[in-house]
Amino acid sequence: MFPRDPGHRYYPDTGSEWVMAFADNDTYFLKEGARRLDSRRWMHYNPVCVTPAMALTKPGAGTVLREHAVVRRYTRMGRGNMVDSYACLGGLPQDLNFDPNSLTYLRIGDYNVFREGVTLSRATGEGNATVVGNHTYWMAQSHVGHNAVVGDRVVMVNGSALGGYAQVGDGAILSAHVVVHQFCRIGDLVMGQGNAAVSCHVPPYVIFGKGVNHVMGLNSVGLRRAEHITREDRRQVKEAFRMTYQSGRTLGEALKEMDACTDWGEVAGKFGAFIRYVLTASKPYRRPVCPLKGSRGFRTIAVPKKEEELEQDVCKRSRVQGSGVQEKWTNGVLE
Image 1 (cartoon, rainbow, N blue to C red):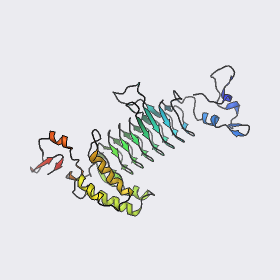
Image 2: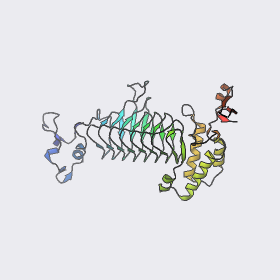
Image 3: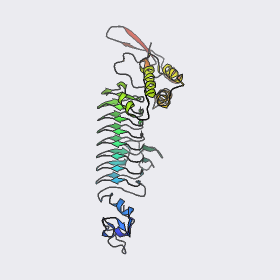
């Protein structure tokens, strides 16, 4: 990338590509009393920062790229982003079926921070995009896979990773080394404890813990700290959580009960909307809700199969526990 201001060029009349850091050797970025914004912005792009095909890579005003940062083509960034050293944004997706000739994108909003070693892949599939919202914070070595969607104010702590097509809601925090399986959805204000992993959908406002697929309870601290959530909202969210995990109902029954609560606000309504998404999702997004840790039965989180799948499932599965009592399971639900 070359600055537009001709004052940066050593030999402006010869077509030479040799440029200096300060236009006309002015370290105050001024010309006739006016601020030279192009010159000031040029200083943010250090000579060792890799930004190929700048016509196709468009960072917004105020965006800062540190030494050795890499921003590849087909990346779009909004205003005020910071990309630290050795981060790589817009790299080819880690997909064996990816066609390198396809036109795909990485789209990033405003005021995001990408610390050292962060990697974000652009999408796979013609015309698709990996999307990052606004005011997110990506700590060292965190990663997002192709076609993922990350909401606003999300925090990805060191070493956390999202698989391809994963979705993360607004305000979620994924602690160190949390991993999210491809096609999984994480709701708003979810907290993931360190070293946790999920291969199921995680409803809004909950905490999932160390191990695989363990919901620990509600993210009470996060709910209290959220300025837009009132005391009444918190009460309604607790009731939605109880209907889903502690009432003994199926997901469909719990959703009907939530739908009957017509006085609920938008915050608790997101919990019901999430359950509806789980029940209606098609493959490959068709996954169960993450179960509550320590729950013996899985009736409350089982996802009923669609009619065409039921026709194929002609046999009942059985499970024999240590007590010798045989429990029959049909369609993933304990009879």
